[in-house]
Amino acid sequence: MPWRSAEFPAEETSLERDLRFSQKPGWREGWYGRCKPRFLRTQVDHFFGWPWGYVICRTAYAHTSDEEWAAAISKLDRYIYWAIDKVPSNFPDEPNLDGLIREGYRNVIIDDSELAGAPVAAVRKRYHRWCHYYNMQTDGSHGVVRFDFCIALDDRSVQSILTSAEPEEAGKIGYVNVIDSIFDPDDEENDTGQYYDGCLRVYLDKLFMFALYCEDNTPRELGWGECGLNLPDKVVVTDGYSTEIQDKDMFQISPWSIVRDDLSATTISCHGIPSDLLRSV
Image 1 (spheres, rainbow, N blue to C red):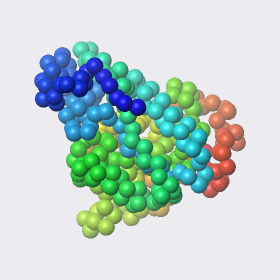
Image 2: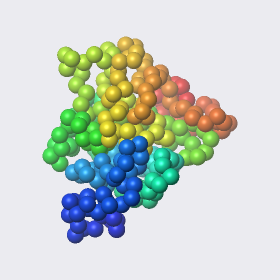
Image 3: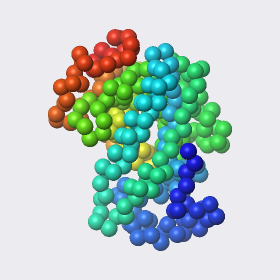
């Protein structure tokens, strides 16, 4: 879908827009700690940074229909839109940028059956190829989530999304796999855990938060892979601000205190997914 906004007229140069934005109260001066103004500033200032969004690579083909794929992407989008509205302003005079950030949200979808069941390294290689096509370096220095990380959706993560509660409903929610663009498993200087492969888990309700914190490279300062990934059954879980280690078997989590009874393990529809993909619903 083409993206248009009155805040980004086609005839305006980037320098003219930068000057105009700098004159808007709260958009530039004193932006430290103002998450959304800072996010907008980082994205807009970066080449190809706006519209903003993720690169999403589909590896789910064996047990995921095209209809299920579309439904999962739609629910992921709903969580992003919900989270934009939920992230609070930090200061009373902070401008309301929710509408503009919602309007500028656009993902890039790589839907290629050659990636069916692809491992992390193969997805990262394909993502690098996409970045290089647009002359973007994959050195992790952008602070723009589209060029520093990609999302890989396999059959298991797609099903965890499909069986998630809707935003603001009490219930369990699923996750996506996020791949760090700069991780090199063959780098001799890696001091990460033996089983860390540069793949992290981010839950649906934290995807916008992850993008917010990407701008200052906060996520990589968390020491991913250094906190216990010496066991093959563990995975790093992050929101971009904090990190924990979780069992890989975890299928969904419940961030709410009340969980709907109809989302118990015995009633979730798994659409034919083998049971070994869904061991901890």
